[in-house]
Length: 70
Image 1 (spheres, one colour):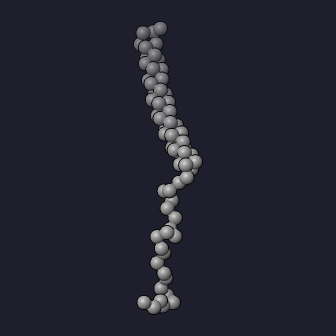
Image 2 (cartoon, helix red, strand yellow):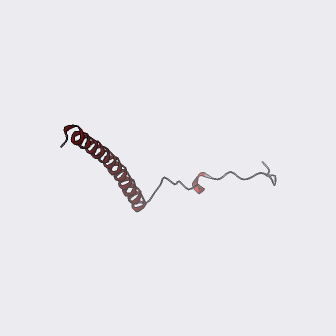
Image 3 (spheres, one colour):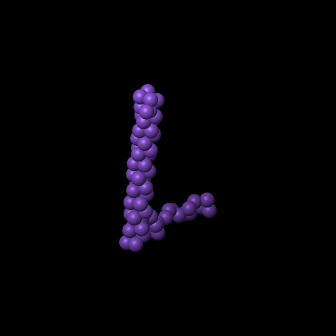
């Protein structure tokens, strides 16, 4: 087949770069970053629940002090 000026050659499979093929250190860095990110999300969720329970406890104590006249 003849090539016309507007056609491009297809890229050979060995010329493409596979981005999922990491070196060991790059893979370890990525895994560590994912673990740190996951632990931060878990901690943030726990802190949000703790803040919620503390607010509810403060409201309950305030209501107790008003209605019992403590």
